[in-house]
Image (cartoon, rainbow, N blue to C red; front, side, top):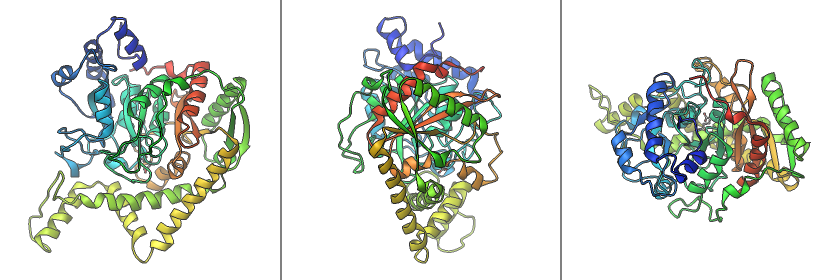
Length: 480
Ligand code: GLN
């Protein structure tokens, strides 16, 4: 039997019944990687097989390999955010999520490709070159956690961690036909996640089904005193939320999301998903989130402002690349900073540093940054008032299926606009999940997004599980 297409919970059952060993599983994934990675290019780097095999403890609770996005620090292992500027950087400590996974027996198998510093929606902005979508190799896998999503969809990884600042877990999950959850802000420790926009970033799971998503949340969620923004809220057993029943649950459909520009095939799939859940007993009502139209603009002011200050530390002194100009231009130190940042950052990173620095500059701070903060509160208030009456909100994850590689690369604005449905959850700090809900005529996956109240991941998992068990899209595999 081939082990690589199986889910984590199926593999754990096989280990329990002694039908497979963790070593067999890792070997199966390695063989799979050897046969498809040349086409998909999901990984920034894979770990040495002998090291991984030596790290496996068959007696551990969850002795399974996992793929980690290349912006989550692993002590002593190169971690670069797919940027030239961090080439050769080996963090002196591991992220809390890595420590937690290792405590349960998970072994890091590979580090996944991504958009540089998580800036993007296509994984084209990577120093390693683009990752390809396993459902169509001429298509992007989404981004910025495109490598994590593609690895799972191509069965090179059982499951993976990504990060989501404005959709970077959910949109690639949607484009690759898998499950992706952005937890509530503060639910998962960000200690050791290389920061993009600290008030928006969250780490979360990318998995083959909803059950694995619950299992992985059990492994990574929880308070961490090393991350002052992590929440001291008890962690439930998320697998208890895997209930195939949504009777009486009240779900809102925001009218502002079903607008022009949405691909008709996406609309059809989402309408059909609503019907499935309605038949299962959920009650749907149209709701309004009136400030939705300002979400993209607000996000691209706040996120770039935070990014410009977070990236100020990469100057050739402490981390990774250090470049010197051939001739002295200013003072040696200024030359070193400038040359390193010019050589080290890609175009999108430079664009965002400039946008963010502008929005924070003394003449424009009030007009842009401060205003952005105020609109962010209005967007959060919209959700608060809907959630007074409703358990969840349902939308598409993305207005389209996976676009072609190169299609939007030269047009940053159209790339930014494609984040329209995912950004609000980060601005409001609420959890949101993307699950597969069908395919286009070209056999490209479509994603359904479910959003909930802060710390109501269980509600999302329950609705998602009910839908999944009534449909079965998650069982479809690529032709690779
Ligand atoms: N696509 C969005 C951006 O480019 C979100 C990225 C993310 O969530 N890291 O900023």
